Image (cartoon, rainbow, N blue to C red):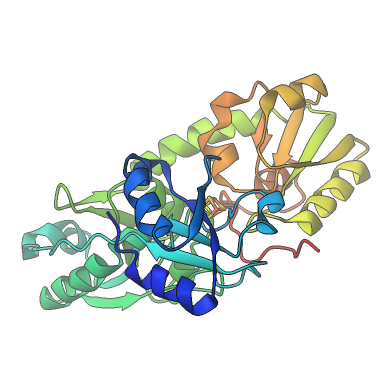
Length: 333
Ligand code: SF4
């Protein structure tokens, strides 16, 4: 169970009485424990909506009914203007990492000396340990500087690799401290330098180039399915940290300038049956980039990120795939 003492202190300081509790699926088995710990002092209601991260603080209807939200597992997205206090209780893995110098042999073999270091939120503590281990093994190491969407240096999200970009002129390669592949592939898509995942379970570096190539082949096959589309649904996701209406309107104009049809839609969840019902040939989704990338199989029609659409139709030229990254979102007034 995550320590929620600080959150309770903060709620007291806020004078909050009514709390909405958001838990990711991985923490839901402990919901009774969290509920009873908070209910001792506050009136708590648990959100059973699926939620995605700090970009998603649930349905607007609930905001007026609670004094604060407690969200477990994620770190704040600093440049979101949250309409009520949100207390983030981060999930951090505190295990001590012991790495042999041989772990870094793939970097030596490739003659990489300057290493850009990145991590997902749960591995922030380990990132510091890995930094020391790399330095102790003779490498130059820098932790990437984040932009204002990210809470910590070196931190990456599925929609933001600013920490990698900040080192693009310096680094020979990147090491992402994480167990899953998603952030490694994302960093590789966002960078033209080689990316390795440091898998802490296996204690080994895994190069991302080959998996990223496979991903791109699948992705290009999907994207090209939209080449003959004539009717587009352009979707704005209403989640507070995914709301990019201005971008959606730009895409709409680009579609119409090419003589094709488009409609602008809002959605809190992208529903394939809705788009099917509207008989659209392709969807351009301006919310979380993971939806088109990870959930393409749910959709009977091609679903593209904005940069994918712009590159398919030659609006933005350039040799390499452009990852959709969110730097900032529009205000919803
Ligand atoms: S937009 Fe997607 S990748 Fe970014 S924080 Fe939200 S859920 Fe995560």
